[in-house]
Image 1 (tube, rainbow, N blue to C red):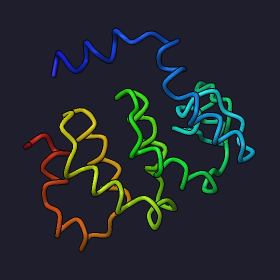
Image 2: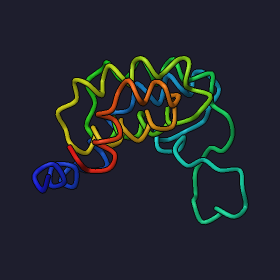
Image 3: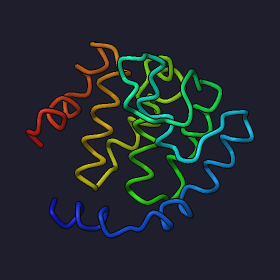
Length: 143
């Protein structure tokens, strides 16, 4: 786990920007002005969270297919985390849950595995979670 954190911390901002350039351009081409996938994460329109300085606030359901598509493209773990977190929205369920579930069962990075479990906890029904008990185990740190 320490080694995974070290890799994430060694990556420069320029490397991350290069990694997500295509993704950001695709999202911008759909009318959503962002600088990073993380502008979609925690993008509250609520004044209570005004300390979060996101470039974009609002709904972005029209780019869910782009985010899902990028799950299958090679990205730095930090960018993959942002993609997964951006898909952790209840209204992304229909388009994202199957692909997130697929990635959950093949993910080898422990941090991303937890991020996927967290996303799936939001998107899956109780019955689906029961059929996939590993999600709860990973999220609670038992795996």
